[in-house]
Amino acid sequence: GAGVSQSPRYKVAKRGQDVALRCDPISGHVSLFWYQQALGQGPEFLTYFQNEAQLDKSGLPSDRFFAERPEGSVSTLKIQRTQQEDSAVYLCASSSVGAEAFFGQGTRLTVV
Amino acid sequence: AQSVAQPEDQVNVAEGNPLTVKCTYSVSGNPYLFWYVQYPNRGLQFLLKYITGDNLVKGSYGFEAEFNKSQTSFHLKKPSALVSDSALYFCAVRANTNAGKSTFGDGTTLTVKP
Image 1: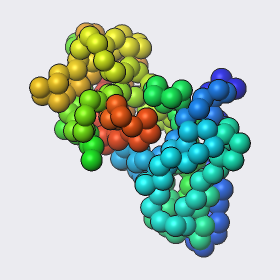
Image 2: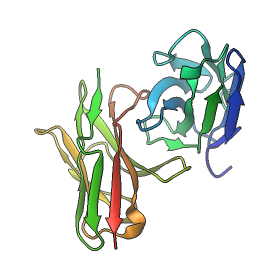
Image 3: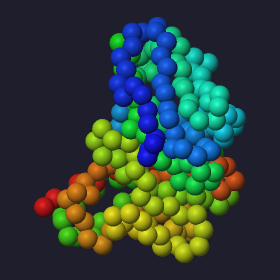
């Protein structure tokens, strides 16, 4: 596709529910990033993949958060047992190695 | 550790006037610096970057930014603002030795009034 695609665009989850957020990066982009953006704040780094290898997961806030990119293309961010503080916009971005990142429109997660 | 400061939450300018959105950074080693713009309900759009070379970088939509190593700054500028430039602007930094994590500022809301 022409850009980074994220689905769903909006997700409402009941507290305790598991959610899975999908990211389709720009074709050919080796690097893939996940960020969390709370209201009124800048994006906060969660994790980084180069191809299928997760090279940095230092930003994942707890072991309830898990990301994968098994074939080096599509990535999924999974949040288990969601809590209210998980409510945020989750942004995915992709890039060529070392180049600027191109962002998707994000998934707005609301935990009720 | 790396960090970005955008000292102004809000910048207001009149259409046709020059604009500046400020950014200072802290990073170990040489920085890669980026500016992004975010419109309501849209993802971040890349504007420009500094990697190496000329300290004055030109980007999309007539924006430019000046890298100042001694002041650790990377201010975004435009000679003549348009109403359509009104948006949320983010500065980001990454160490040149790390192809992964970028750190973003909290953003500056630019409002251009007719």
